[in-house]
Length: 393
Image (tube, rainbow, N blue to C red; front, side):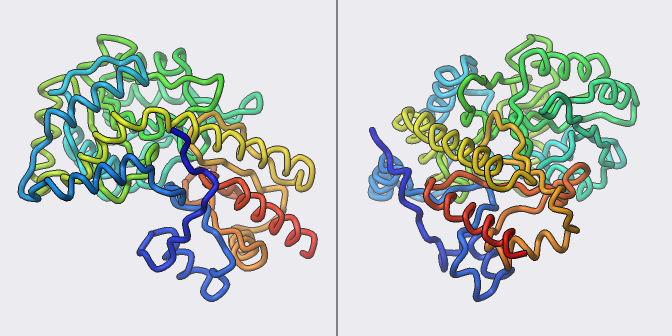
C-alpha cells in the first residue's frame, strides 16, 4: 500500500502537546510556525489502523480487558519479522508507555540513593525517572569522535564497578544524537554491566526507524547471559504515531525480573492498558508492515535535505550524522548565541520551534533537536525561514 507522506495535518486546537506548547511559547506568531519538537509526527494516521479501530468500535465491549492472544501474537510476530528476535508471548508485559516503564524499572530494580547510569546528552525523562524516584543520576557522557558520537567505555566501566551504581538506562537507538549502536558496542555495554552486576533497561522505542546501511539489534538477543538481568522496552508509538493510545510492550524474559516489574506496577496503582491501544498495536504490527520503509525513506530524504542545505547555506550549523530515529541533532554553537538568545532567535525570528539542546543535559548546550518526521515541503519552508532570519540578524 502507498501511504500519504505529503500531507501535513494541522493539529491546532486538538490538544496535541507540541502544538499546544507552540501556542503557549510563541503566542500569536504560532500561526506561521510548524512545530519540529515533540517526537510524534503530523502525517495522516495509516488507513488500516483507522479502519481497524472503526471496526473494533462496533464490536468491542469496553470493560476491563487484559492483553489478548492476538495482541501478544502480533508483538511476537513483529519482533521476529522485523528484528529476527524470537520472543514468547508470556515475556510481554503491556504498559501504558515506555516512559512509565522507565520509572517503574527504577522503582523495581534499585533502592533509594542508588546510582543510575545514563549516556548524556539524552532524552530528558531518563533524568526524571532517576531523580523523581530518589535515586542519583550518574552520567556517562558520550564522546564526539571521528565525526560521530561514541560511548566512553573506559568511563562506563569505571562507573559500573562502583557498587553504588546498580542500573543503566540505555537509549537504543539514541535520542537525541541519532546513533544506532553496533553489535560490537552493544556487546561491550552488556558485558561491562553483566560483569559488574549492573542491570540494563534498554529503551528501543525507535528501533523500527533505522536509516539505510544501518541495523538495529535488540541488546538482549545477543547473549543468553543477558536474559537474566536485562529488560527491553518497545512500543508502536514512534513507528506508527500511536503515542496517544498509550500502549507499550515491555519484554522481560526472566520470570523473577518480570514479576518484580509487575509488582512495582501494582504498587504504583497501574491497572490495565487501553484496550484500543492494544488493538491499534495489533493492527499496526499485522497489517502495516510496509509502512516503516516508506516512513524511513521520507526521514532519510529529509536528513539529506538538512545536511545539504546547511552545508550550502548555513555552514555555521553542523548537522550531526544520523543513523536512526527521526530526530536530528544540530550543533548551533558556531552561531555564537547564548542559550536564551538562540531560543528567542529560533522562536521569534526564524519561526522555528524545535527542542533546545540544553534540556537533554550534559553535552546539549548550544544544540537543537529537530524532529524531521514531516512532509519535505514543510521542512524546506522552515530551512528557508532560518536562512533568511540569519541573514537579517
